[in-house]
Image (cartoon, one colour):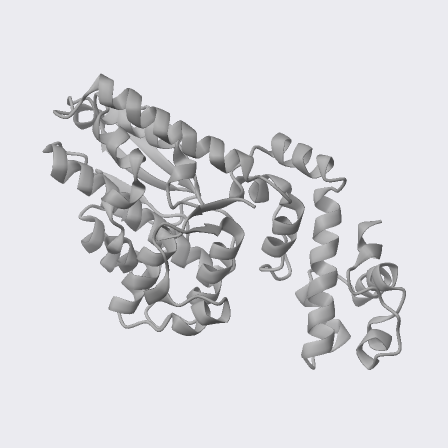
Length: 346
């Protein structure tokens, strides 16, 4: 199981609660009660993202994700926060954050690009349903901005972005973003980007401490090693994640990024579990098809469309291959379909 600190979910849920959003029903559906969560606990990455996706569908305020980033505590990053503080300057802190990005609360991929006058901290978001995409992008951009401001406030250095890019179309409430970030915001870009002046990034950190940095780097390395040992049963978590999508399933590269892996490592892990990404997409489709046929009154044509098939005939053929029965026979109970979807693995 691939886990991370539950603090990220706690910060988000507490922030949304403060903003008047009701997150309790979603948490309770997964057996969680916000006031009883242990801050030292860990949660599966895919489960946490599923919870965020469900929360996004219930939000009343479209700016809730943006506002929730203000509730992320700097100390909650643990040894990573101290490692960043002991860096020589902003350039080193940015590169260190990229290296240890799996210890953050991000689902986006993180990168840092050095430019002539401005350098860029880049967030590449993972594919999600529309409302969940904006919620997660806003929360991650806002949370990252909060981290930069926390470092700035603690060290007395200026890391304010000159401008910011957002990876979705300009919303009607776009003005709120420039107010929140305190700089121009450009929408419709492919990635989230913080553009920071090189002269600001080059200023020495007054808390630079090579000896302490060595200690905190070792602690961060130990956390990464623990996460690597937890990379078990990847295939089951991939199927769980794929069940969040309708119609269009992301490619292997994007799903690999979600689990913090390169596509090559991702495919190797699946091969070691005697499966493939194509097989897992089929399993996810079969499970969702079973649910829709049993629990909804959708027509076979509507189920086919929701699963991303261009023609109902293709879905019917695939469902027969998975279960040994037609969708209508399965719905009426006139079938001995394998509920585990073993046929979908062939």
